[in-house]
Image (cartoon, rainbow, N blue to C red; front, side, top):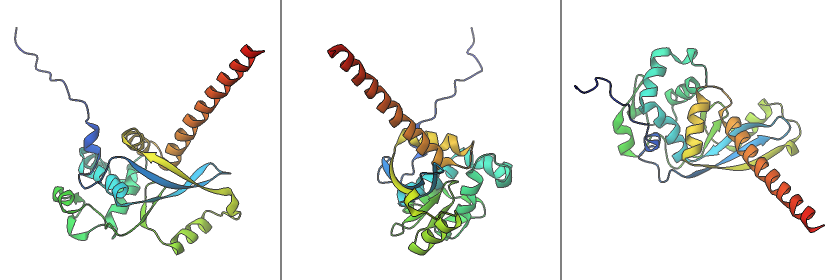
Amino acid sequence: MGKSSSQQIPLLDIKILYAPSMASPNMTLKLLVDKKAQKVLFAEATKDFVDFLFHIFSLPLGSLIQFLGSKQMVGCLGDLKESLLRRIMHQKHFTGVVIQKTVMMSGGYVKDVVTYMVMDNLVVKPMSTISSITLINSFGVKDLSQLEEKTLPFGKDEALKLLKASLMTKQVLTTLFQRDAEIFYLGYIAVLKMHQKIQILNI
């Protein structure tokens, strides 16, 4: 019998989602959350996280976005692409809409000395006190007590969730935050039920 003409497609290696310039695949994000609306306004991010976002476009998925066009994307990868086209990345690494592979061998896509603000829809901007205040005002937040800072661990599981969410919604960071909060809540409920069972047994 001859060999089958069909070949098994290898599974996606999670490692290819990470930019070679990243110091570590495990990061943390500082999220500014509107507790009342249960929505992430923006995240404070380092170079590693922004490089991760932009590195997505060195993958075949970037070719799909170029083919479809930003305006036809269902999720928010089109918005991220528009951020990539702006001036926050090293201009010498960018020609037209094609990301050069040599980018990651020369220190990444963005400057290391800058802290970045990543919006819920993954639009990336350099962070400053003025831009943060302006952004908060643009959301119509009148009571600052309804804002809360949350720290979200970001590893390989979160990377896959972010990639999936970016294809489905423009509220990517909110989606990640809600899932993280849900896991915490379910864990809390499980501990509470166990505590109640112990109390019943002791009666």
